Amino acid sequence: MLFALLYAAVHLLLEVLIVRSRSQARLEAEVLALRHQLRVLERQVGRPRWQPADRLLLTAISRFLPRPDWQSLLPSPQTLLRWHRELVRRKWAAYRRRPRRQRPAPSELHQLILKLARENERWGYRRIAGELLKLGHRCSHLTVRKVLRRHNLPPAPRRGQRSWREFVRQHADQMLACDFFFVDTVWTTRLYVFFFIEIGSRRVHLAGCTYSPSNQWMVQQARNLAWELQEGELGTKRFLLRDRDTKFTAAFDEVFRSEAVEVIRLPFRAPRANSFAERFCGTARRECLDHLLIFGRRHLVGVLTEFLDHYNKARPHQGLDQRISQPPADVIPLPTGPVERRDRLGGLVHEYFRAA
Image (cartoon, rainbow, N blue to C red; front, side):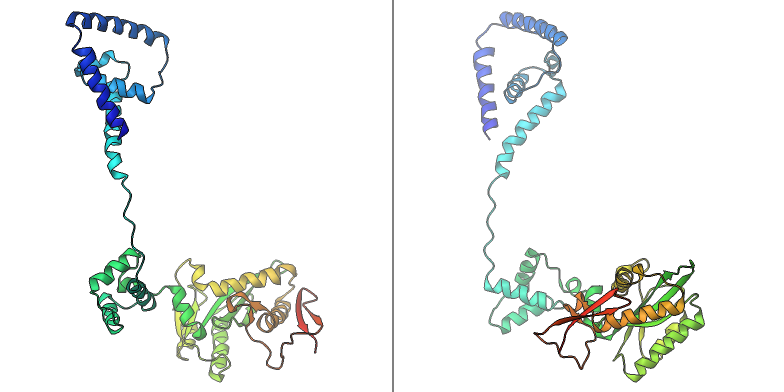
């Protein structure tokens, strides 16, 4: 706003003092002298650095010159037009800088609307308005929509869509996941380890180790786990998560379908969809297999059996709030007493407990 007022004042002074107080002959002579001096300066001086006052003055003078005479000025016509647009922009920018109206603090009604919407993701605007009426607040569904939009909460169809993480969390106790990882022996042969993990308790079951996981071998491992499901050792399981590896054939899936377990095929190249199994693969490598030399299948089975006994019965899990997935039933933790250590796998893994 200050630049706009200053521009108008300079324009008025030039019009009154210069243009209207001198004769035409004196003006023409002065213009010729100035043009000649400008040509001399252009040959000696490099690119000038214009100050805001210089831009304002030259832009005001250009208002009195026809467009062909702008060539006598040092700035180009495009530069003068750009300076003029900048002055106009600064003039109107003052109106856009008005302070915004402060939003009122959320009232009890607004807080209750947000609470109902977040806790009931499938409720629409009218359903929330009806619940509010039951609680003593009369408002329309348009008010509910306005409040939810202000806090970036989508309507019920989009707000009620469950993510994969929420689905896994809600059905964790009824879900199994399976996966492979490989181990290279000292003879440079590769062994494949097949395992199952219970999502809810994080208990891991070693299915087997083989040099070549054939179709018959995979079906047999599926049957072994199905027998444990029939005997109730794994509880009630309704879902099995697996990737799209070609090792998982239709016969493998049929074994679990016969036990009323739905096989869920995970998306392509999405290891996070099977994050619990992938996490165990990393834990087994970091805490055990990366520090041992494996000589064969029998050696690997013995190492993993010992490690899984520690993993299921003695190792705390971050996903379980640092609890043990399968604590021994006959051991009561003592708050006091000497702390002793038990070594596993030749001292590679340590377990600590209080002596009775």
